[in-house]
Image (cartoon, rainbow, N blue to C red; front, top):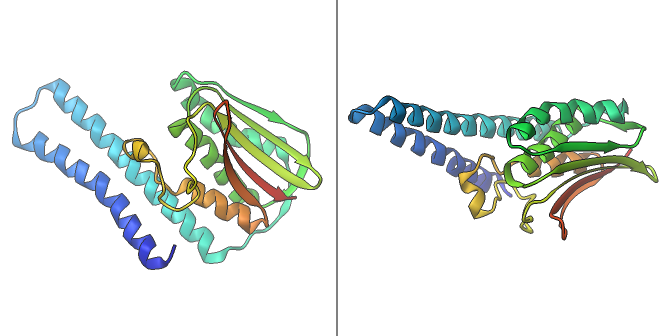
Length: 212
């Protein structure tokens, strides 16, 4: 995606929540509303503000990463790396009445944890927003390669899942920037690895695989 297209797509993604915010506030300001209606308005506004925050953070992550494309590998305990990320998403899973589990093979890996953590967090966040059912993460090293896989019971991915701003049309009304998996792919590539999404009989599996 060239810079012109990226800016155009980013502008479109920003315009949608801003327009919804303006509409909600216009209605609230120009006609009397009950306390319940005002509460509903505030909830809608809060959701759109959070969407703008998520998009801004995703844009900043991509910009920071893209400006250097540089990683610094250091030895990291795999269990510590994964648990730190899983624990941050466990409350969100419980609020949605979903289970989040992890199966981790003991190992020390040479990666840039500064970027692997948010990439893994994006996989879990994507499963929470767009997936369904139980979420299971596996982390293992085989033949010198680290494999991080997040599986859920969702309906599947589009072929362009790792393209910036690509989301299924149905997900346009759900939280998410459309940048999370693009960031995952960029981090994997910087580690000389790859990211892929597979649709299985059970649901969806998204995997990062990198030499370690």
